[in-house]
Length: 264
Picture 1 (spheres, rainbow, N blue to C red):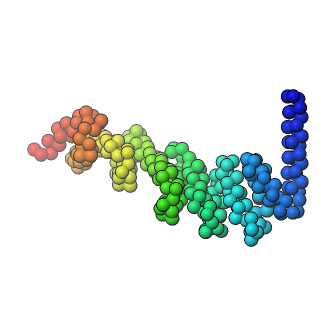
Picture 2 (cartoon, rainbow, N blue to C red):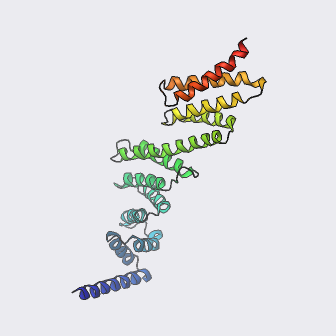
Picture 3 (spheres, rainbow, N blue to C red):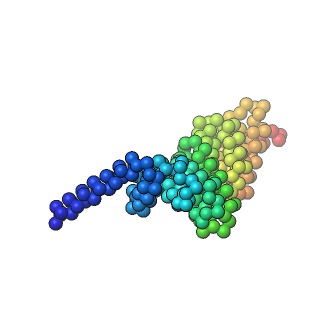
């Protein structure tokens, strides 16, 4: 029985390959389309793509063109070829804006871009692009069934961008470039007012301001100590019971002690 099943499987595979090769070499667009649709339904997306590629340029205007381009985009998405799926989904929306698949394709185009978003340590150009695509989708379809998922995706992408900016600012602190660190953290707090990293940003801004001040030349120390004192107040105002309070309070003691020499 096992031998019979194996033989039958091989025959089916051979016939399938033979059918594909015949359609692939055929000049008949309908033959290619019919097999491509059959392969798509069967989950054989790579072969379906090869046939769709052959007929895509000459298929517009045919009754089945909308369905074909939808399957073409989906096949790229199913095989994780997200750059191609993003392009094809956007092309579908542009070509068939009144299609009942337009909303889904608009959403999946944004998802495709989000799949191209790299880890936070790399350049986030694709992440910004994905955020823009999701925001455009949200604006275009405010009552969409995909709205909840779109909002979750945007939140995750924005947090990745925020974390990237936070890490850049913290790296300046780590290498003792305190001026750059303060500027970076100031920009971070302004650019991302609702970020979950705000408390840490306020603390490291204080740390940078404090370390810059106590290591300053006398002519700049008073001004920088006052900056550090303001940074302490900002942290405590944001969260009086911050996890960094013990460290921050020790800094404040040193700041106030050193400032006394300027009040005498």
